[in-house]
Image 1 (cartoon, each protein chain N blue to C red):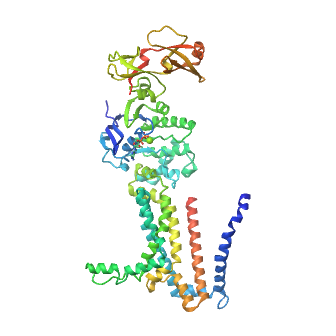
Image 2 (image 1 turned 60 degrees about the vertical axis):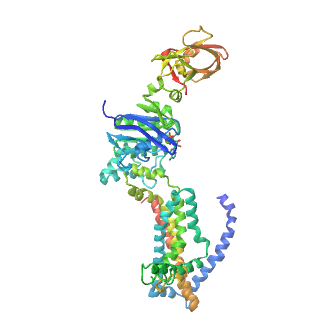
Image 3 (image 1 turned 180 degrees about the horizontal axis):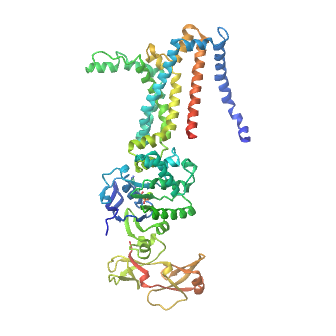
Length: 274
Length: 357
Ligand SMILES: Nc1ncnc2c1ncn2[C@@H]1O[C@H](COP(=O)(O)OP(=O)(O)O)[C@@H](O)[C@H]1O
Ligand SMILES: [Mg+2]
């Protein structure tokens, strides 16, 4: 413990940063959410009793959940290929997966708009080759939102998975088939469980980041795809309604924290073998 | 002769230009313990992996019980395997690991548990069922791997250097345990090791591998006493080589530099050859004795005390060093001294004349 105490001062910058940039604003929000217009929980009651707010909360969870599932389904084979490909293909894959980080999210979302809108490239081509008569609505709806979010968040799934998969020895799979498991059973009974730590970390990252997403749903979504971050922005920007916006922000924060705690608890239970 | 359980016929595996295994021919009888022995990179694992079904042969074929194995996928071969680092599933308990092959074969849950428990008892791990593999010592993990590979009563058990990760004492203990299991269960075993002592102790027969080929197959005694190639004589135990030209090859015997020995394999008259003789087969005399049949004279260069025996290194006139081993009491009687002359003699039937390659 002495060694720990002596190096504690190394934490000062981090403590200052978190205190000034996180704890202070959050307590300020918390205070406004319970003290205006009068002291009490009225803002929270509004959120959990009015269907527009509940709808947005549900949207947020549904979009974040769907994004997580899609990222897992797409990211798993990508990570697997990265582990098992030749070195130069692996490098190429890592590069491709990382590209989204190199451009601004705003630019990317607008690019999707150009590609997907009714007069966009995809519709032009499909109509041009006669596959469809009328342009499809593939943006300003849930599909567009998910497409944009999955593209941005995929690396958060791929890299944790990749680092776990790279450490799984091939002999586990071989042992399973040798002991009588078909490749499919060996996958579900042995390989997939060994990937779970990576899948869990990736899913948590994607889901939590997705919960607070703003630009992508705002640009690529329709009226029914509003997420909580957009709602917060709208309350402040259009109505100057700080108390309700603050309450929404606190709900988002507590929800995320709860989720984090639940996942931690579950993985601890798993490790302790129920 | 009854049909062999396992038959490897002209088996080969080429990776591009490299032959990892080539022209492997071997019959293994039911219940036999056969060891692949050879230095690292000699093709032992490759051959074993072809039998297990993880590697596809590029030549020849394998049959089990007279049936060709080639079209049968790994999971239907019913061949147990103990992997070098055990490959115990880290997310399953010991009991779940051992029951895994039964689960895959659709054995009912109650029956599964009972048989897994029997298997744990068999390897001395009763009561460890609910532990995770990482909570066991190396030797215990080894036993779990063994139990898992045997619980479904496979037709054949493969082991690739299963004791390589254990310390010497535990290794020797596990050697005996594996031998007992083999005797009690009657399972046919193909065992891979690069440790010649381990091979000599455990095997009914040994196949010596070198450069992807089998050099010789035989019982430990045959390989030690009657090696057919210089490689085998050199790899198994300690041997003295005296190089020269083969002379007087007459089917059973030949001579090198006037020293007589048995022919290990047919040899051309005048070919490069070595006479191979084990240190313990040399009779040692103090002083320069009479030159005669099968004697060597030289200077004592080193005397090595080994407790129950004593090794003398004797340098012949041409510089060849020859080791001779004497039991402690005999060594005292001989009373060699450093730098003095010594004479070595041996019987022709204890020496082998082998091609020098
Ligand atoms: N997948 C592979 N690709 C190319 N060469 C291989 C492969 N596997 C084994 N080899 C080569 O085949 C030879 C025999 O290897 P192996 O059977 O593993 O030897 P051992 O088990 O006796 O140490 C070695 O030279 C090795 O480099
Ligand atoms: Mg090997």
